[in-house]
Length: 101
Image (cartoon, rainbow, N blue to C red):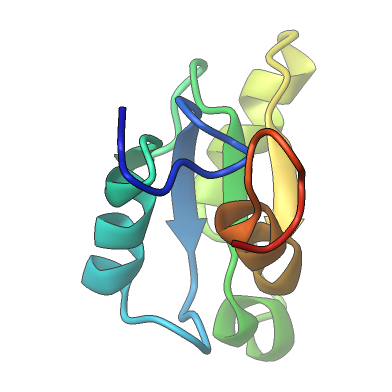
């Protein structure tokens, strides 16, 4: 078990767009350090897809990851689409207390 598990311990997480707080490699490292599973692509097993600020604010078109997530959701997958701030709250919170840690 990681030293600082997140409240989303063991979940598969993909990222779309540019994050404000982390470079992608750093975000993947933070995800893995907390016992979560970073994914470079969205699959039907993806639990959370994080939408970075750049993708959310500047692109009107949908990313390939967004289109893939929508396809899997339509087929019954329970992919949760998160904005970066919601994702960070979940990443930084404890699985037992659900408070920042």
